[in-house]
Length: 234
Image: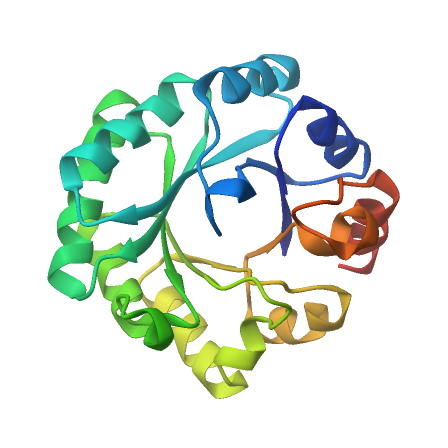
């Protein structure tokens, strides 16, 4: 299982790299769960990393606007991203979500077929009228994505497992793997979730808060010692 850590700037990225992160994710928590960062920040970090690690970026918690989202996704790639994550927040069913991801995949893969595209849904989808976790897998498969991901939209201390049971998550992982999709799980997960995620066959564990000082994803800063401790336990 690979460790993905979400950083907001170059200083945090250096801490994540020092801690041994596998996938360096760039996001902006001020704009939401999968808030998008700025192209110049992505470029700065990408140039510093210089292909030594995989760079992931978030397009945002997006609305049902295929053109806007596909253009933003291409911006991530041009800025130096190897992974592009799309939070399908404002898509309310399979058809809307697939239309968005069809556009993203076409935009990104036409530029560089080696880029990894991630369709991300929310474990608390039923509280925000978003596309269901079950549909995320179908959307990822049918649009040609590489990874199906679950995160949480509301960041209030509750975790992935407060919204999805072990059986729910097992079904998600098994179904995604049956379609040759990788599985990424996030949502305030921490050390205590490692065993479960490994049992589920999770390919990528996504974190921020648990490797930040004070455990605070917004006010804290990534600490390389916390990253290393988490990575060692994985």
